[in-house]
Image (cartoon, rainbow, N blue to C red; front, side, top):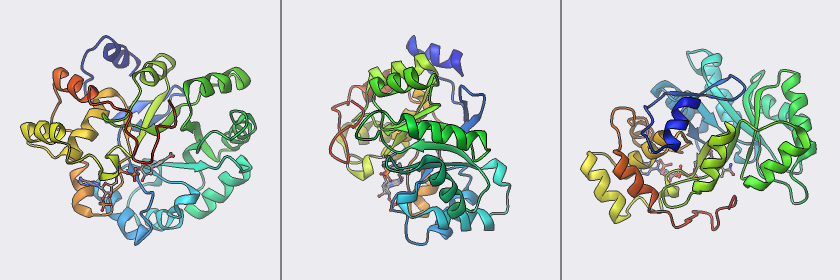
Length: 280
Ligand SMILES: NC(=O)c1ccc[n+]([C@@H]2O[C@H](COP(=O)([O-])OP(=O)(O)OC[C@H]3O[C@@H](n4cnc5c(N)ncnc54)[C@H](OP(=O)(O)O)[C@@H]3O)[C@@H](O)[C@H]2O)c1
């Protein structure tokens, strides 16, 4: 993966890879299902996603979807080991205890990845990080990372703890992203996960995006997801509707040209579906 990312830095196209290697050696699927506000019929919807081929599920205690995800995993006719579960702890939590609570809600023995949901008001979450390290040491999670951190906050966390997070999960679309954050993460072997990769539906009707999608015979949502895959960024689109869910998986059989990748990057206006890109 590192070689591919270096090629990306030189402006070359990434060959599509269905998984990424984290700097700890763990393997993470390149695409996952978001579950924020997937509160109704969560278990049935997540089970449908697993059966459709999703191998990664993103959640957090404050999404109130963990119990439904746990139920779906219990009913799924496949191996827990083959599904990558991401959950998060809040900035006011005791990280170790909160990880335990998350696992109990999810009814699983370990998470694949636990993230600090957002940096705390004071400091950069050193105590949270130490709690997550303990959770990892005790086998409660395979990997640990952060979400909504700026470059400076990650640097400070690394300075204080001597360890790089494997992931920074941030809001990320062609309309709102940070080339500086991408460069920083590539240089340091941190994977960016894209939250709200479909702009929460706000920009799917954008004229330029829609025209380009039509040229590829794809939907705007598929183009947004594919753009992330080719950047080496891991999109986590949320879909309640099964047609959306299936559509969002049909992104592995076409390639956006380097020229169109650049045109999509040029749409950047620091758009945020929630008001402000928190990591700038
Ligand atoms: N770490 C953080 O702080 C943070 C913050 C926000 C989100 N997240 C994570 O990121 C995930 C995704 O973000 P999000 O849920 O905010 O927004 P999103 O994935 O950008 O957009 C979800 C919306 O897009 C619609 N949609 C899905 N597929 C579509 C398609 N093919 N065509 C048209 N519309 C489509 C969905 O409709 P239906 O549901 O009706 O199908 C839903 O209304 C979250 O669920 C959560 O797991 C993390």
